[in-house]
Length: 189
Image (tube, rainbow, N blue to C red; front, side):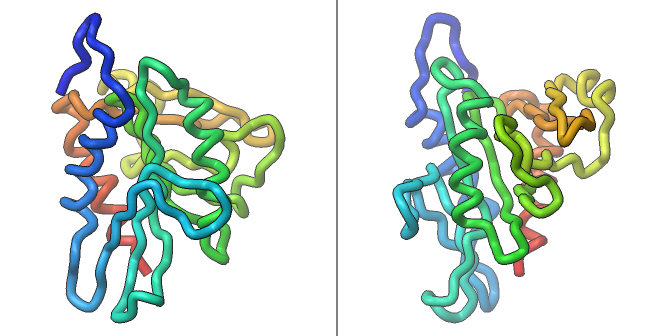
């Protein structure tokens, strides 16, 4: 799927792509089940595009594990996506203040560990609390060389990589994307 010049792809087009990817990684395993719910949340009026729950042996014993927010690249910025994702993660975070998050903007995708304890929230930086998943601890120069775009943000005055945009249509990124999905799933309770 490649964005075509002059063709407008909508959020539902990108959501369909994610609805094919998520069940590959989050499926039924021995003694546990992953449940992927679109546009659902039982608390307040915050509805992520997808919430992935982890259930063990009892449908009433479930834990929100991953929050996914999707935007159409043509209409929304990463700032707006993360602003919306912040409230979704904040409502669904675990007692330790953490939850996994995936931002999907057009064909760009970024994986985060949301952690309000290690990265306290301070206005107006909605990016605080999100730590991009960088399994190989790649530097900005290495990411740039691979074609991944990174942006820097300030955490209480300290510059850090705050956003790593991987491309779903770049074959050089596929192994990294696969490894990040696998790493998140391996962290299940």
